[in-house]
Length: 63
Image (cartoon, rainbow, N blue to C red; front, side, top):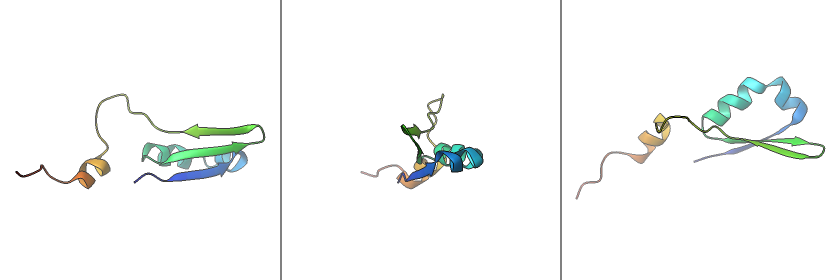
């Protein structure tokens, strides 16, 4: 399950490692600015599925 975390721009600038780590964990990060907002999400280069999603899916379906 993905969570959206909303940050002010100042807070996000101070805590950028946490913003990136949360995005990499699958949580959308929204950063509010005076003119609008930024959305940060992690997109993996390879086709690997994150371990958390793989484990949450469970084992193979048995017929």
